Amino acid sequence: MTQTTTSATSADDGGGPAPPASPSTAPPSTAPPAARYDAVIRAAVGQGLLGESGPVAGFIDTEGVRASVGSLFDAFAATPGVLHTFAAKACSLVPVLRLLADCRMGCEVASPGELRLALEAGFPASRIVLDSPAKTREEIRLALALGVAVNADSLDELRRIDALRNPGTASVLGLRVNPQVGGGSIGPMSTATDTSKFGVALRDPGAREAIVAAFRDRPWLTRLHAHVGSQGCPLELIAAGVARTHELAEEINATLGVRQITSLDIGGGLPVNFADETVHPTYADYVAALAAAAPGLFSGRYALVTEFGRSLLAKNGFIGARVEYTKDAGGRRIALTHAGAQTATRTVLMPGAWPLRIGAFGPDGAPKDGPVVAQDIAGPCCFAGDVVAYGNELPELAEDDLVVLYDTGAYYFSTPWAYNSLPRPAVYGFRLVAGQDEDPGHEGAVMFATVRDAQSMDAIAAESGLAHVDALIERGD
Ligand SMILES: *Cc1c(COP(=O)(O)O)cnc(C)c1O
Image (cartoon, rainbow, N blue to C red; front, top):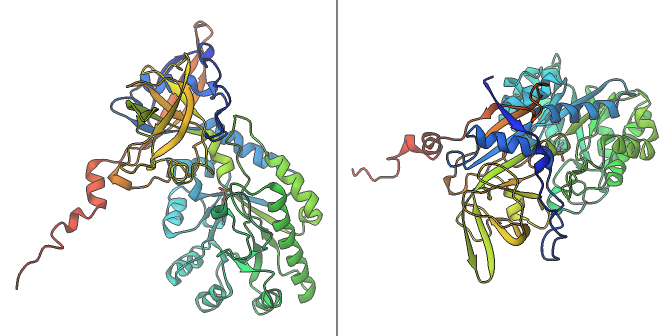
């Protein structure tokens, strides 16, 4: 891993005035930005990682990720035999997955690509879990050959596994249920509604009996899985879904007269607070909610698997982007930046559901101050809705300034959208290292490591069919 170091002055000159409360038309997300990363932003500019030659990049706080994993492990410390997997889709970058493997996590994957990344990152097959609602026979065959755990999403998929399974497989096999406890505040993120596409709908007529029979017919089926939803689902809803799943396991084992179900995969989905810097709810809050809703869950009778994504990474990353131009239109101030739908896809497409805190920095990476102005923070994509925040109250932005989109460590720069053939932005990990005693003006240094290079023009051409350039030209006969 190549690393570069730059010294950073202390951040005590940063911050500027706190933006006033957001107007009612703006998302409720303009709490004062995080001074905690000011030194990193300044160092990124100093290193040339952000600026004219790097107009947009993602940044990951390596030590922050380790600390978040630590708080997850701590919350479950009283329960032996928990496998904490990271939901790969939340930050599908091999060095990030390797970091999480190094933190003794497992990995939850939901596609052949994610499985490949998890293996490349060094997760042992025994710590990988494959969930997906549309696994092909080929994917199932590969997972079983590798010994990766598989959660079937339907009874039909179980029938495929019947046909493909070698009795010697090391794979732990489970069934995903939809406890149908209802949705959260973001419809597309709610997987436990009555009509969700995921799992076997537990409360539908005849479903319980069919699930019990499926386990009776398959002594090798030893796990139940549920993932109630992601962002927007309150803890009580998630806990209720886990409680229904635990009850079902007890019922199946009692009916079969044998402890066939030995583990419960309780999914992920701890919501992240995007409104300010505080982390809440915490993993400890989550464990408390589970203990209240499903007291038997921590009895030790079931090994547990978790699948957290967003809550481990979101607050440990941010996007930095250059302001290329500003303009006024119809009485609105607009900053045209390089952070748009290609890297903040959900926020641009559903701004009300996914508001982000935004910070304003000068060309040198120092926090801007001065009177605030309501500004639209627009991106580079060629559609009118490519705006990451409307009417955001920030110090007035100008050409060559920078904006920072906080809490974007999960599902943002790691899941880019290829719109307009914009390149996937570079991603850097960073670490703050303690300062030298003899250098009191400097708080420490920032070390960067490249996680992903910005996509090259050659790579964009290649993925756009360059190898088949003549494929559609009539050749004549
Ligand atoms: C997306 C997903 C997760 C992770 O959800 P987060 O909200 O990122 O914690 C876990 N399990 C399954 C099955 C998922 O689809």
